[in-house]
Length: 278
Image (cartoon, rainbow, N blue to C red):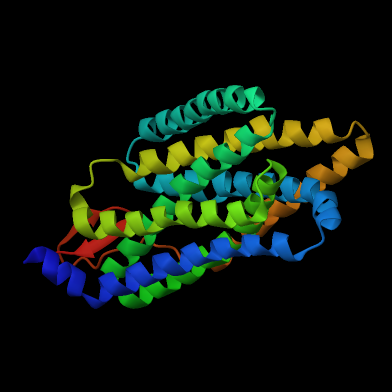
């Protein structure tokens, strides 16, 4: 009976549609099929720098602040952050060894990007689902905010996948599959609500650690290997700072998911927010 009510609810249907809309952003990768290949190759280093900046912006302006907000103690945030960086470092080693054997040393960067994007989309799904649990209007506003920061990031990450040796068609196909983790996040937020066993703070911090490793451990070294000229490296750092600024600006204009509960009502905690007890 509970499942039937959940599936039949307007909020649940709207949340699923929102998650699918976020997934459709992955189609931005089609732009690499429409643009001249020579131009794409020339633009890829700058897209890598922009992606690195946006990943770092997500770490410092979005994921870590949210993790700190969700956790009463600093330990889950610190452990999750270090765990994320360590796991992504180990995954990078495994991917790199496999792709070096097949003659594609950049392939590991692409798969590492997909793993990070999957975690991030799952968290977006949790945020969207919980927002709809609070109020449909908040869910719609949160979906708009997620779309705002997903669009430029997907463009940059699609460029990273192209740089890693994926064809534009394969980039779109893989991004679409990874985007389904947002739908999974919505299902988890509605199906489990306050019974979610994984700490939201731990998830956020883990993703932040992974993003930090991808940005500083892979993308920046990759860029600096592309050119030894100081002015080119400075320009890469400038584009990286532009990516940071873009995420900062988006965070400033998007609504915050956490709303304080009125003291006259009884609320129970749910992932990423408060939901009124029926």
